Length: 356
Image 1 (cartoon, rainbow, N blue to C red):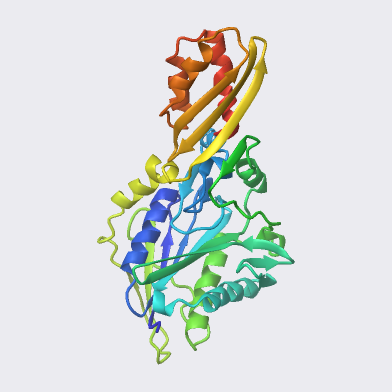
Image 2 (image 1 turned 90 degrees about the vertical axis):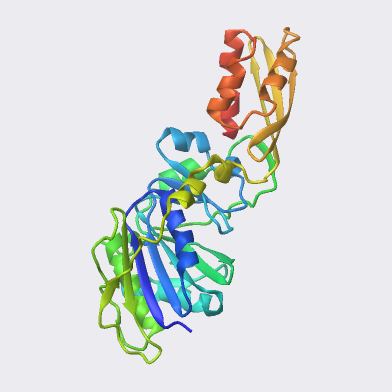
């Protein structure tokens, strides 16, 4: 039974800190509480817990262009976040989890702004038949959250640029992303801002979870940390409207360890998602086909086929690749350490770009 509504707005754009805060809020949410967490990430591809990063995202290109790869706790497909996107998370005890009611908050907020929002059979939100919000879910230790995206003015070119599947031959055990036709909400409301949508969500939250119209509208309070704004709105089952907004003490939320977890290679690339990859090319000096078996982000087996004259090329390259992390810099170091001709090294490294 929800007796208290809390609103937390992150004003930082670091995906690892934001995901850390989300997990900390899940641990912190108490009986009778519902937290609405609003947050944004800057140029980030967020993959589901069980996804293969190399299959879902052009990781090397994303990194080169200053972007971030992040992995969340929930399942589902890969999504692209930029500052034209607003992320939301409903956090509460598992016994109070009510997906239709939570989706009603989203629908009501959008419709109040003139957006013809409606649910699809996949629990996504559509407008004019096109998707603008995807949802994912997570539960742990008697608590649960429902989070998702609201596309206000997302750079669609970058969505295609970073999420387009690789041409490499991959056979993965991870979960494939479901790609749908999408739309930005500014097509319906040209002057829509993230702030207006955030305020509409807070207002709709109070309307759906209380009987007082617009209760909680305009919740605002000064930041309690440099990148974090947390507000607390009291609301009782007797429908007494909130009379004050108190800053939530966040000193207890030490996010350093969680942030480092989400930032770590072990979390991003070390999931147990074994897959095979094959790359091949023909050069003036001969053709090469390289087959890799990758587990937990590390090459655990490599086989090189070539018709090059150098009989040492294949065994040297196989030995260099074994136990090498599937990362650009690690591959460069491994190939550079071989006794292969400099021209061969220069030709071989770009081969791996198709699967990075």
